[in-house]
Image 1 (tube, rainbow, N blue to C red):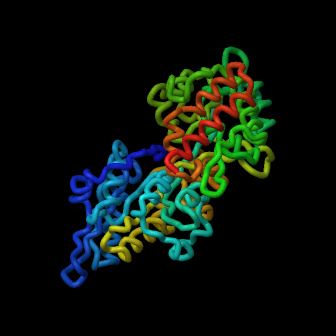
Image 2: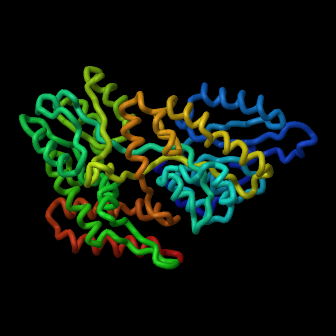
Image 3: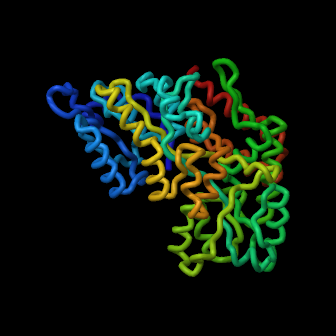
Length: 419
């Protein structure tokens, strides 16, 4: 999944090595089938599903031979940057949804705005569509999504007399307090889980940063953002999560597997990792969307996932678009969602997940999902960990307004560097 961002900007020297084996042949259609190179990220699709797609597509398009290449996430930023700068680029590339702004800034990505209606873009998940849209132009086509939900221990809920998951934030706080007894913790929420904080900030009408003309301003010091941080502080206090660490330190699935934690905030796929540690929890885990302020709307969540792009240097633009159209179309989206437990790119396809509790809960949140600020410099903000440091400071007693002003100033400086 594809929260990785990279700031590589000087990878021209890698172009020949990175792109030579993965690019279009450039042969005209009259000389035989066009060979289309498509980069797919490791973990996005099963080999069986990819082979099924390849066979079906080539049968329907005898003028095309697909060269589907699996790419590792490690170092992908440098390889994509090199590909976009080359004259021998792949035809289609899967990229993390929050990476599109960085790549589009290079000028090496094809503008697909004219294709949005054909792709039923009015139905796209906002957390995938928005990052792919830069200055009103659509460069990234949403492919699939994943986001966080609440994973809970059904046994601890029953023991506490809780029959149904909460629908609002206030209910969530109330039941979490009830669960926080008898040696159990109502929720394990480390102090630096900033993606969860972002959702609470968005629910309040705030944001992490806002664009003003051609500049960006950090916005964690607004009243709305401070209200989001206040809710995070209240929820975090109902568990024993460390205030100075994120969900990876220690890995929260290991904490949950001990059977004394009622809830964690995570993608549903974490259940498999919990069972690796404690198989006895099989069939004892439930899932529900992160609650919102009112029962009619779930809480906002950060939407991770992937978009598909066409390099401007790709030599078969029309054929590349047709491949994207199939990958983003209803048939493959349905197959992908069922095979990988991902959320499809369209809100109208959420019903295909109805038999999977975790993924269905994820789809509910994805319908109101958001992405990080749509600027190439957001990766640099994440690299500084200033938001994590801000959260720890507030949770350990520092004045929220003072700390929020500090972090907002830092974000402003980082986002406008080089502009």
